[in-house]
Image 1 (tube, rainbow, N blue to C red):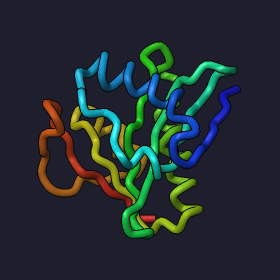
Image 2: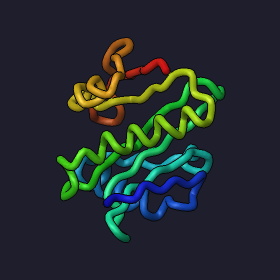
Image 3: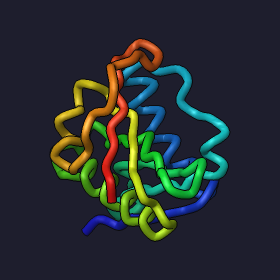
Length: 140
């Protein structure tokens, strides 16, 4: 059974950071992975025993729209629906915090994954570092 843990700010950042470094930096080549938002965001990490497998974060700048991001699953755990578990866990947290709308910046190659979870593309594609992204939103 998987365990889903939340923390506000930097408390779980070492586990979340290890996953984000593996997926976004080493696997996908991103260089600008960590930012000031990490200090104030709600982070989720999914564990198998003591092993962190997946992560994500949510935050709001206005108290109504919550942004989900940094959603990553370690390569060896893909195909186990952990990405959906992370998104659903972040959505639940955002709703508890008063979210009226959810949004995320999706890599275009995984846009279909987020559409299955109820997110709709908004606007045009744009580059984030070297990767095409698109804003996606979900009303709650």
